[in-house]
Structure formats: structure tokens, C-alpha cells
Length: 296
Image 1: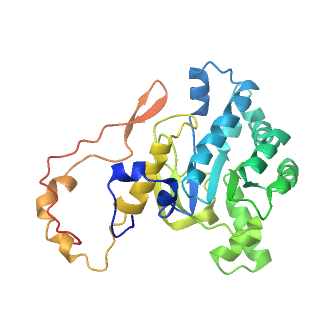
Image 2: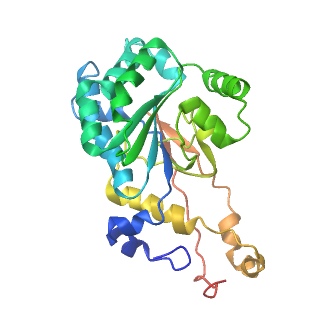
Image 3: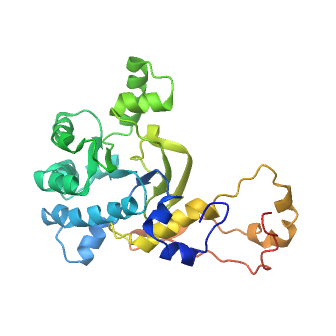
């Protein structure tokens, strides 16, 4: 299987993981959401039980990417609005995130799995201390890198970028990444979110690649399946690779496909359902069979 000789989706879903890994992105930005609604559905109180409930699910969801060849996962944990939430959540969310991801039990899991783990966050004492504990995962035998992104204030990312550019003299994106995070992190070329199509505050600005492709599953609460991840990688590797040096052959069929673009449908428009956003259905017009000859 290759980009020039794509398999069918069915073949790709059944292929060995090492085959999927050949076309998987090197770095994925994972911006999950909906974990509290899923915990509620499962009868988990949104108190100290909630972080404990989330541990195994986070490891399983992130592990799906690593299993299929992704080397780096940038996992979004806190956005500025999270710290403003009522009912005590906003006051506790930072402590919950720190304890969930950097206590001795999780560090033992990272070591067992062979994951390097580090917070990408503002340099406040609690997070600096957490990263010190996570130093034990920064070993040469680590097979995968799990980066935990935190944004407490909307200006934090720009402060960090402007400060590191000034103090380090970095002239390239790669140099600025190494200076700020102390590691060579390839910029993300694929994002997996949830719910509303949005980039959000917690996608690190320096780590956005030039070919970022976004996917927004509607399954809440760290419940990615292997088939879901394989399907997104398939789309990323094959369906979205439409750029060609010579576009002329495609334009020969544009008139036959006019119904595709003669629409008022908008990707990203949805409805509010009991306080939750959900995407509206997208009507696919009747089209002729694909007229493009092989290789056009």
C-alpha cells in the first residue's frame, strides 16, 4: 500500500498496524472533550472520582495513535475557559490535571508503555514540579512522546513564543520549538478534536504544521476506537491528497460535478440540543460515477 497506489478503506481497516504506520502522521494534536458528559452517563460523580475514571480511558485513547504509527501526540488538557467554570470545577481543574497525569501511578504506566511525557505549559511552580517528576520518562528507550498542553490565559502562548524568540535568538520554527520545550517536536499535521469544528486555545501555536488536517468525531469522552483512528489516517493519507502540479485534467470534469459545489450547506453549522452543539446533517447530491481515468 502506498499513497500512489491506495488501498480501499476496507483493506486499510484490516491491514496490519505496521502497514498503517507507513502513512500515519508523525505528530497528531488530540483535543478531546465531552469526558464529563460521558462520566455522567456512566454514573461517575464529577468529584475526585472523575480524574481517576479518566486515567485508563486517556491511556487507551492515546495508545490507539501510538499503536498505529504516530510518534508524537500533543494532548490538550486545559483551556482558559476551563478555569472559569462554576461549581468548583474551575478551582480544581489544574490540580486534577497535574495529579492525573504526573502522580507515581501514571509515571509507572508511562514507563511500562515506553512513553516520554512532559507538560507544555506556562512556567508556574506546580507545573515545573510536575515536569521534574516526569523527568524519569525522558529516557532514550522511550518509543513515543506524549505532550500535555495547558493554556491558562489566552496570552500565555504568545508570551512564551515572543520571549523565547527574543532570549534564544531562534530564527526557525524548529529552533524555537527546541528552545521553548527542550525537545525536537515535529509540528502536528493532523488534529483530532471533538464536537464543534474549532482549533481551540490549547493547540500550541509553535507546533502547528503547514498541512494540519482536522477531524471532529462526535463520540464523547476519550472513546476513540481503532477503526475510528484508522479511518482518519486513511482520509489523511489518501483522500485529502488532491494537490497536483497539473490541475487541468480535473477541470475537464468540473461541469459534471457542479452539484457538489452548488449548495448552501456549510460544514461546521449545527444545532444546540439541551446546551450541546451537534452537527447538522450534510446532504450529498446525486452524482455520476467517478469519470476520472486512472492516474488523472
